[in-house]
Length: 236
Image 1 (cartoon, rainbow, N blue to C red):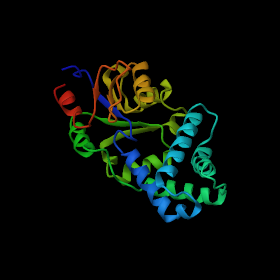
Image 2: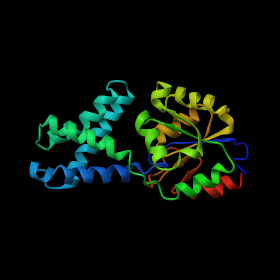
Image 3: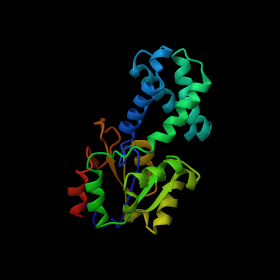
Image 4: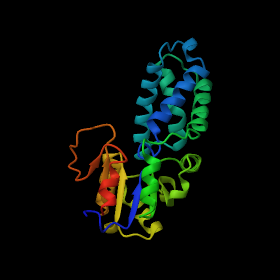
C-alpha cells in the first residue's frame, strides 16, 4: 500500500519504455553495412560502435551543460568517431548523421513488457512522459511505436527549456498534468537525471535498473524489469 497516495505516474521514454540502446545499435549496424565502412578501414563494427558511443556520451554531457547545441550533438558524434578511426571525411559523417536521425526514430521496439505494463497502469492512473530527447524525434517515436494513446501529456526538454534533472522540467510536467508532486510517481532508468531530479521536487521515484547496476544511490524502490512494477502499483 506504499503508493496508495499516487494519483499520476510519469515515465522516462528512452531505455524505460522505448528500447533506445537496442534500437540505436540496430541502426548503427545498418549504417556500418550500408555505407560499407569496412572499405574505409573500419574492420569491425564494435570499433565503430565504441567510438560513436564515446563521443555521443561526451557531447550529450556538454549539451546538458549548455556548451553544445542540438545540431552539434547530432553531427559531431559521427564526425569525431570517424576522425578517431582515421577517416576525416565530413561529407560521409554528415550522411551517417542524417541516416541515423531519420531511421532510428522509425524503429518500434519497446523495452520488454512495456505494452503490457502501460496497458495495465493506464487503466488505473493518468500516464505522462518526461524526456530529454529532441522534440521531433521523441514525438515520432511515441506515435510510431503505438504508445501515444497511453499518455495524457508529454514534456520534453525543448518544450521546458531545460534538461533533466533541472527541477523546472519536472515542475512543468506536473503543471501540465494538473498534479501535485507529492501525489506523483516518476519511473526512469537514469539515477541522476531521473532519480535525483524527481526526488528533488518531491515526487516518488522507482529506479528502472535494467542494467543491474549496484544501487549506491540509496533509492528506496528499484525494479529490474517493467513487469516488476505491477505488483508494486496494483496493490496501491
